Amino acid sequence: MALWNLHHHWQNPYGGSFQFIDYQFPLQTQNAEKRVGNVDLVGISDKGNFILTELKFRRNNDKPISALLQVLRYAAIVDANMKRIVKEARKKKGVELEQALKVVQILADTKWWKHHDFDFTVPSKSQVQFGSLIDWIKKNMGISVECLAFDNLEYPFSFNGERPILDPIPTMVAVPLR
Image (tube, rainbow, N blue to C red; front, top):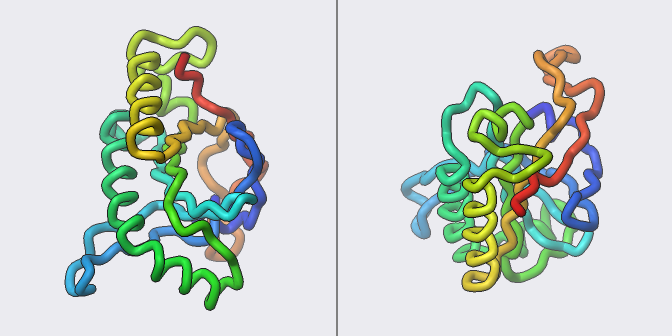
């Protein structure tokens, strides 16, 4: 919520920029009777791409592969509903989105990535293997997976009244995968 409260345009280390537009975005089955989870953050890129972001922090024990599978599961549900999402974004936010979901993100603080043996200077063997899987996903599914980290995220978040805020605004960097 603190990231969303910033209403910040983030420079994407993979190119371009994006802004988070909602948090805890609910997903439902086609008949809307059963909820299947919430996407941590959703955003829009400067190119009109709808972005799903799985958020992890240092206290979370999920492994990067689990985070990847979670965001890809959500991506499948969102992709099946993109026409409705595009219409709703146009109507409620005045935003034009691409018709296909093209980008998902795993965003965590550097401590979470390092806890899972991801190195920010010389990529580990598991990092390179994870990068190869991400390349396969892009080639075979057409979805770019962006692995991002905040390298100066301050804890605890401060509170402005009742809204959690980040001060200073953290720097976003790409997680090296090669």
